[in-house]
Image (cartoon, rainbow, N blue to C red):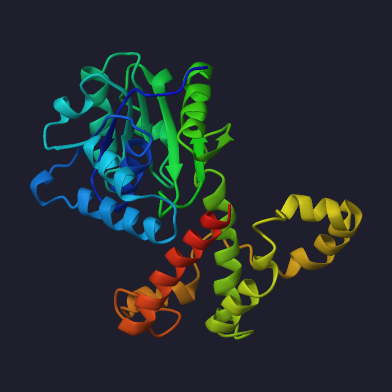
Length: 311
């Protein structure tokens, strides 16, 4: 795919992820149809306006670009209308395997064989989603990270059936619309980055559970320690920097002491059982009020906008 991608894109699901992904393609001039079962109550356009207004405040877009982006959008409750003539369909419906399987099986019957069918699931097996699809070679995973209009990374996940052409075309399409795709060559639970993220979370929760440190301290240790260098120094480059011999020596000593549980933490289960659901309830591993929740959400977006503006 040497030429710039300008095909029609259908986004299935108009929530925060769906609207953010639609924004990515529409801002590049692609025709984008957003399908949502509750299309009349869908706030996709409002979400995109809010996103781009924040970007404008950092000099990352302007009023004309916002108008042009909105002009590329169509919101519909008709699935056939949404996917009609689409070169790419990206599914962003709730994380329900059965729902996704039914949707992909239907897409397989109403979309031309040339249409790429992609899922934005964060953890569900792409192979399982494609179970009832006849043309499995055109199904691929595209895991965007929230907020998708700001986080560059997209994991492109290949199943055993995904064709080389679809795998590479999807990778190139994402590069052409300004994302940073990475190839995940095997469809495994959690794909690439969620496996890394939740391995860290497992140990972080364990440290609190064992009384080694409280939740705030664990987070501080990451924020003000190795977290500062992660954007520029990944773990494997870091291992090479200090030497694989030293890394081996550390692992030989440390690994027996790390948490290697294959089930969720008892402390996490206790939090859920007691209704301590984090932001949703005002308490999880830490206590939260409206002002702290607002500061956390806004702080994340502000940080990401500043990083992007510097680049």
